[in-house]
Image 1 (cartoon, chains in turn yellow, red):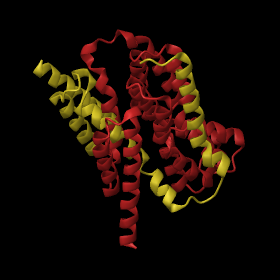
Image 2 (tube, rainbow over the protein chains, first blue to last red):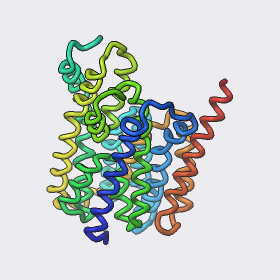
Image 3 (cartoon, rainbow over the protein chains, first blue to last red):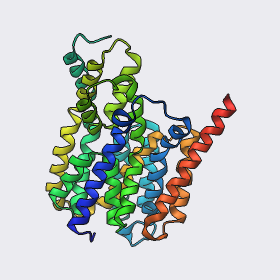
Image 4 (cartoon, rainbow over the protein chains, first blue to last red):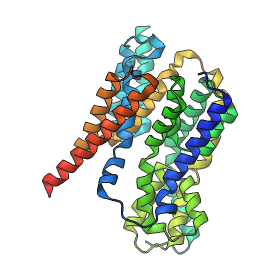
Length: 109
Length: 236
């Protein structure tokens, strides 16, 4: 990456302040006021809306293979999703996903 | 069952929060390793873990930095990932809103998914708890996880440069993100949002400044919320 030290520290500082303000929002600033349903409805889906869009191109066109689709990585991604969905454990999913990737890489050379 | 003292509540939180050490430890280590491999120095790596102290947002920032995304896009994306915590914050108010300000500041800083989930479940089922007991329980539940987050980030940053390339750590971030969302794909609305996110994420991957990510996420949020609205109306 080619960010200057100032840019990196600006990012850290801005993320720190922004994250704190999100966490502090109702506990400290807004207080005991009922949130409108439409707002809760949208907040609920932010993680599940951001992560797949971030991950999908990384799975389909990994930089490590020069952007060529790689069976090992696609299978590893599928295994991660399946284990995470079935066990509801992020930890098992990561172990299963990386384990699959290493096994595939060893098999395919 | 109510606790006799805030101290007992703290210890109970500590006990209930202990298993999360196993979940949080690898993430902390991994962040330290990947951030160092990406070229951040130890101070910067620790800056993220101590000041931001939000794993998912930190990994998001790291991934986008490795894609050379503009700072503003990184910031918006990382904060979008954290927006769920506004919901946490709101739901805690009825239970601890009357605690002293310094305690609420500290509770906000130390808001992890894990101690939040433990605490809110306890508060909702145990009606006898006093406000000081609730606060103590919340802090108890986070007081193993938070120090571990710092220490293992540091450990990861120190060993980071020594991990050989065969470990394909480039793929650790995608795997981590998939692992984080997979358990959340329980409802049609969550599935719909995730699907729209994937399709738009792929179609818009070439949009400059990584703006495609924000467009895809916005479309996905609207999709999830709209599906939920229609389904609840159908039930009513």
